[in-house]
Amino acid sequence: MKKFLKIFGLLFLNLVVALVIFGIAMNEEKPKTLSGQEAELLAENMLQALDIDAWNATNYISWQFPGGHHYVWDKASNQVEVKWENKTVIIPSQNHMSGKAWVDGEPSDDKDLLETAWTYFCNDSFWLIAHYKVMDPGTDRSAHLFEDGSLGLMVTYKSGGTTPGDSYLWKLDDNYRPTSYKMWVQILPIGGLEATWDGWVTLNSGAQVSTIHDMGIITTNLSPVQGATTLSEIGLSEDYFSSRM
Image (cartoon, rainbow, N blue to C red; front, side):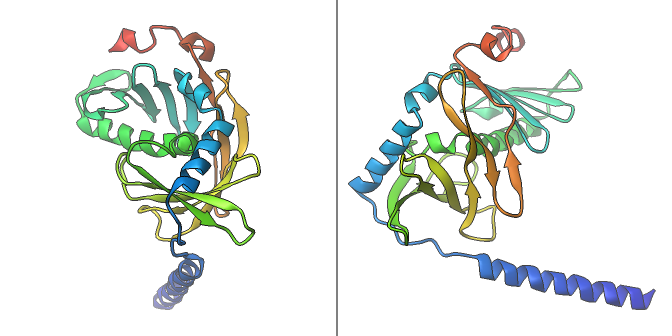
């Protein structure tokens, strides 16, 4: 038994050392960027390529996120329903502590559920619509020149969400549509980790969303995604929220 534990301990130590070396090798420092009109124009072109007007007109959107998170977002009245396991929470998307929660269909006064739903929503909605948030209040934008001569857009979130200070460097194609971004975020110990923005679909409202994000070690699939101007267009009754609030 002692011999087994010793061997196991050596294998575990080797694994830890390998992961540390991998992290050091993969880690990238944030690149130098320049703020100014060039970065602002880059962001504007990106939003126009993705039809920001169609996104603004999308009143309702539903999607699923890996881990069993289900969402129905009423953008028109700033409410979002978050479902996971046996829990359902409806929170205002801008003031999450005033929402309502249910467990197994029964009302719950557990405020932690509201906080958990808010954390899920902030993360999971970002992977859905980060491309429409590059000019949100509280963001800084700057431009980075890649080695191939193309320009990338660095966006830093100084406020909002659950991890202010996170930065994302977008790579764009010749039509200003995102192909990937690199991340410098608090939740990840490795700086510069890249995620693709693939599997683009156009919703009923005309808004465009990416449903596949490949990070090499893991791929995030958002499916199915629906977006429209009315609840009935995504298969829900028009009193879906009002009947429970």
